Length: 201
Image (cartoon, rainbow, N blue to C red; front, side, top):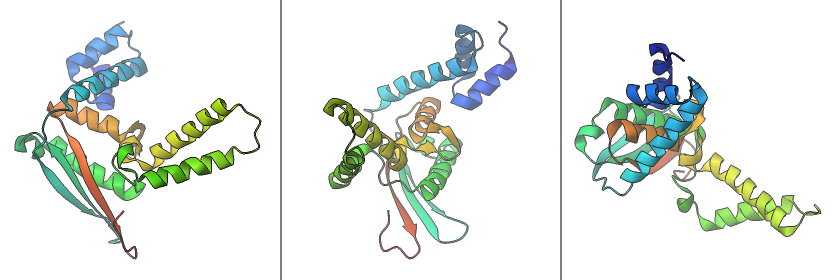
């Protein structure tokens, strides 16, 4: 199958991968855009994992105030060099991330940062919802864990569907940025302020 420049362009827009990587992936999967995109995302995840241990001593604290003046977001995203921190793609990611946090109201950046008592409450609620169903305990436990995974995907920033493209998670978008910049990038922390609420979320 002939791989056209338009196909490469579309795949680049979907994944953020380089043109040669996109062309090779399309050739490998006979022009199947979905399979090529999945392959490149997995590759991006692997690249991001390799960079995960590298120190991130530079970065930006970015602020966003929603147009109605009722919601504000502060976010710190760290990287390895000041050069990348000033990069246009990095800056665009900061803007998009603040918009996402404003709209999606996550509780924490990662699962590990969610308070343990909150997780236990959700687990208990899930178990209570399953009461009275004649299923083996191990099956019930799998269902409870499935419900918990869904809850995490709704409340943990990196696992939430990205507001500008819900076919990808925030982690997917972050991995693409890591691949593009060649640096380890970490969403360190955020605060979300809402008028009338006493604490930042």
